[in-house]
Amino acid sequence: MDTVIQIEHLQKHFGDLQVLNDVDFQIERGKVVTIIGSSGSGKSTLLRCVNLLEVPDGGKIVYEGKDILSGDLDVTKYRSKVSMVFQSFNLFNNKNVLDNCVMGQVKVLKRSKEEAKKIAMEQLKAVGMDQFAYKASTTLSGGQKQRVAIARALCMDPDVILFDEPTSALDPEMVGGVLDVMKDLADKGLTMVVVTHEMQFAREVSDYVVFMDKGVIAESGTPEELFEHPKNERTQQFLSRYSNR
Image (cartoon, rainbow, N blue to C red):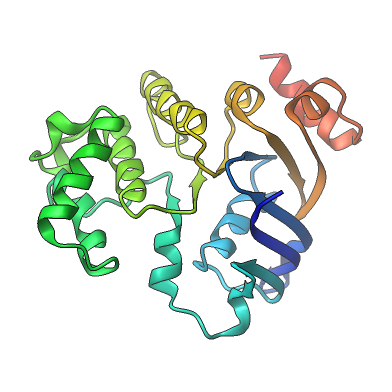
């Protein structure tokens, strides 16, 4: 197994509230890991710690053999390799679609503008957004913005993309298009960690599913193990709510 990121004994508090408690977790190259669980279970905080948007209180996050919490890290460069796609898209509203995808390549990867534009157009095409390249990002629908955000992450040649509830801010009719793009990326072997409430996606696309409850990983396994034969009582309760829908 080729581990991209190894997480050991991760802890995170917000004041007196312990949000992550002794979390062990690994991300394997070419695999899709989905993280499921109730709101407030620590799923998004785990992702934000891996991306260093939150600083853990304890534990290790090992990337390329080095603990990224040890202090000696170029955070911008790290985030280009461990990219994050947010539920609220986080596009630059003052830039058009193409420039949103070009800027990071030029600033962080030091690519020429010509090369960056070429790569941006390829990735926009891959997510079905190339015809919107010169549109203002503010004119797009939520689903279109999310596809641009995914293209922008792909432009950086990331080792892994972290998706934090990428469909939760979308109108229901937009969700399918974004999930289709993500399924396509999974088929191409992109390493992905996806926090999601889309159980069908988790079931069909994941190599590995993690169920979080109250800041700990309560259960994890293959989709078949977790969805068909959950062992933990909390996992069973959580999944029964979805199967009854």
